[in-house]
Picture: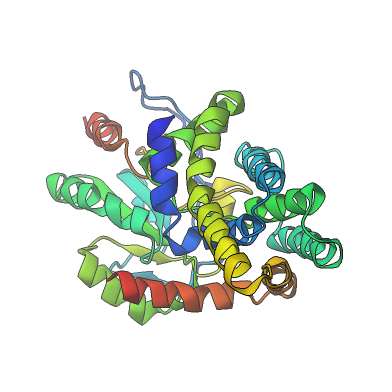
Length: 186
Length: 168
């Protein structure tokens, strides 16, 4: 379980993971354990359903889930239902680049989905830990120095991601960020 | 060059019996391509009779890049034999769609084998089903049957051993 966890942490730096990492930052900024927990479990389970081949929706469906979660979040504040919707949307939008550990998990999932679940859960935990942590630190800083919170901007960011997926411009935006990050890393 | 036929490589009349290598069924052909680079072939069917490694990749994907060293060694090791590698380039991001950029990346990465341009990811999804991944590597036997299928990095020994076994 340790190796997939660390590979997930490493993969969180790659552009192909940002569609999960950015919502994780938003969720982390709420600094609410239950919200973060539900988001984490939602990403794990929705990813597992997708990689097992049981349900692999088109990207606009993932966008609708993100958008719905963001709208309710914006209107009512962060709660477990919103976090669950955002987690499901992020997981279904995720198109992973596959390293050795995730590769083993995905190869196993092709013929034995239940055996793949622990490894996938560990990988997902690693993938979103950095985002949740970063969001929590940002949320703390904002709360300490401005007496405000990031609920509204976080919901707006997630909503924008969802909107871009629904209208089909997300790949273009992601491409621009990917090109920048590739230039940065190289 | 565009290939619009949607073919499945036909099952052979006589299948080579290969101890320990599972037959995963006939491979699908490569259809609706936007061209092929670094080759004169126009379809996968023209490679019938050869052992063929088919890898779905994109040049911006770090995990794909990590597999290339082994593929280069494999390609060099079996040069001159009835063996070929076909990299099916299926871009994740729009900046990876430009054939000129793909050609430049191939030079930079030492990819000397044929590259099929699957810009619309038709084959990427058709071969892999609804959920598709970068990289994914298949080995096809001389009859066009899939004998190896691996998602992601790794399994290099198994890949190399499968090719060696098929080449006899």
